[in-house]
Length: 343
Ligand SMILES: NC(=O)c1ccc[n+]([C@@H]2O[C@H](COP(=O)([O-])OP(=O)(O)OC[C@H]3O[C@@H](n4cnc5c(N)ncnc54)[C@H](OP(=O)(O)O)[C@@H]3O)[C@@H](O)[C@H]2O)c1
View 1 (spheres, rainbow, N blue to C red):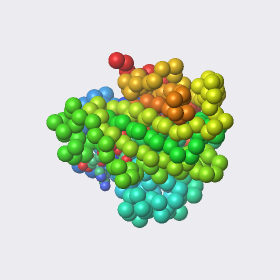
View 2: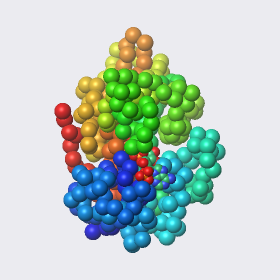
View 3: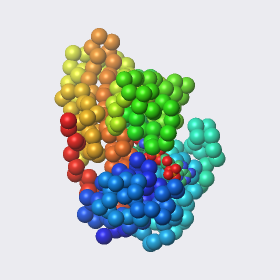
View 4: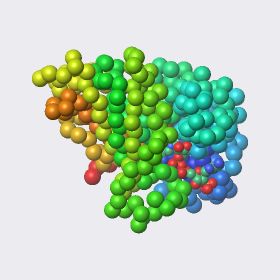
């Protein structure tokens, strides 16, 4: 069995890593850390994980074969550094190893990057787009939840050159996307029976979307307007993406050709399915799946691509385990066979 350590296990991401890895046949979680819970059984914080019988430590002192970090940005890179320097594979769920341009990281996160020298060799962990690099990486920057859904919805159209570079992403997230920290907007009375747009002047997940879609496109690079919305549900992200189809991509068979492009792009992918009807977040709950539905708005000549994910699984911990499997030379799907919990 490989031994896994989890830094900041008491986050939503950390709890999901323990839950998912409990069913992994080749990996055992042997060390977990947390700040305020240090010295307590994990069951005190997460009773649903009592069967794992883990004690929360301040630091990972034990020898481990792989490390996940679920700390916030900046704190995460700092705590990952000793493991990275020892050559232990690290999957960081924060934003610290996602952006390749260090000045962009500084602009969006308003802190100096703790280890800019690692950005050249760390790999962006959107598995479907970076599989070969992840398999040989020592540091993976696991993607943000919104970019996971949006980039998977748009990638086939961008790669095939079907759309103009102006893209709109309308993202809707459940409340767990904001983590376990307290904030007025996330109180029951504020969030329930309510839908709100936020970060209209720019969300931190936007540069990830432009970085990744930009890699896939010929010039001119895509320009993305991304507006997230908070929805009163626990988990899930629905991304509805719009872009004008290039003139040679329209016509009476545009929808059929578009669906063929998407089906081909995701052929054989274990966790991405092209659906015959618009997907719903509930269909992905608890599972490492991304459901994608592309179609054409014939009146306007626009692509509409809708994707659904569970932000805590394919948008976070599940994808982190998918990446770990590749990094450790294991089959990519190991431990991730749970189907969505529906209804
Ligand atoms: N939530 C999502 O959907 C999602 C998806 C993808 C990626 N991510 C990323 O994954 C990471 C974890 O996210 P999350 O939402 O699961 O977190 P979370 O539930 O918000 O965890 C926050 C907890 O982390 C601890 N913490 C905060 N700052 C710390 C520090 N400087 N040092 C030590 N502990 C600290 C605090 O616990 P104590 O007060 O108990 O110490 C805090 O309650 C973040 O980097 C996030 O951006 C989140």
